[in-house]
Image (tube, rainbow, N blue to C red):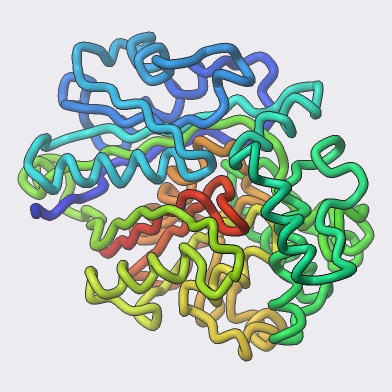
Amino acid sequence: MRDVAVIGVGMTRFGKYIDKNIKDLVREAVEDAMQDAGISKGDIEGAYVGNAVAGLMTGQEQIRGQVTLTAMGIENIPIINVESACASSSAGFHLGWLSVASGLYDCVLVVGFEKLYDQDKFKSFQALGTAADIEMFRSSFEELARQYPGMNIFKEGSGQNRSVFMDMYAFVIKPYMEKYGLTKEHFAKLAVKSHKNGAMNPHAQYQKEVTLEEVLNSGDVVYPLTRMMCAPVGDGSAAAILASRKFASRFTTTPVWITGSVVGSGSRDISRETTVTERLATVLYDKSGIGPEDIDIVEVHDATSPSEIMSLIQLGICRGDDAPRWITEGNLEINGTKPCNTSGGLVTKGHPIGATGCGQIYEVIMQLRGQAGKRQVRNPRVGLTHNGGGIIGVDASAMALHLFKR
């Protein structure tokens, strides 16, 4: 397998764009990435386009990549559409990496996009709710409820005024609270950190710092979640240019290398003994020779604030028993010992699902280059992205982990 570098990244600001269509969003991110890399459209030999719900939200099905890229003059090349819930563009990134590492191409484009916001919030929640086995979703959780008598997983309003996934997140975090002493206040502190970081990120949907009291009083969603602990609905796009070592040497002297890339799927097993994140993390560390102790920065899939610390525990980056102390002592802050979600994470940067994975990659690349501005971590050398999507059983249905090194 050949060495593969990321030589260009670009993204839109994530937000609510009534007046922008999917072509507008993709064009902005791709043009930024090409300009960043210094390449032209003719240099791109293949493209991998991640999207989850454009069909449900806009009516555009089947050829989403071809529709968006040919509109900006990128055509006559293989354009592969990748749909894998919130992990769509991360899965596309994995395919792009494989195509260059195998020698098939020397330069490829990976882009993710989503038009998720609609003035009818129910339409967005319905679209999000399809990222599950719709015949089995509730029955899996009902089986769990039988194992835990008295626990009603789906509270009033689930799927109507919030995504059903909020109920799922609230359910799966409770064992971590009981086992490690994590509290609602700990999660609120993570949300405060996210908003602090997002306030320094020009691409974030929310760019305002908040207080602990504001988070706790922002409105209950489903215990222990409040509104400011949950990722907002929005639109956006993010892109990356991947290249072989020989091709990259023509355009940059400071490439960021992809040192590991793994994807996997969840299981219908509802015992919760292991998660897809835990299984894939072991594979990633073994294949790359890089352990969790070597990682300087990490972007994890925090669709809710509790998910941030839960994912760090599953990745082996933070011991469960240390989790409350790490939050309280600021270990996850930009100037902490293990900076996490310096972008503001999904909670603040936003979560346009098909674009989320590439949005995480954008942040890690900028950090490793030393180009993250006010939120720059001091001298990071290794970064990790963790991006999951959908649900099978009670676990993520799709997961992608990527390691980067400068």
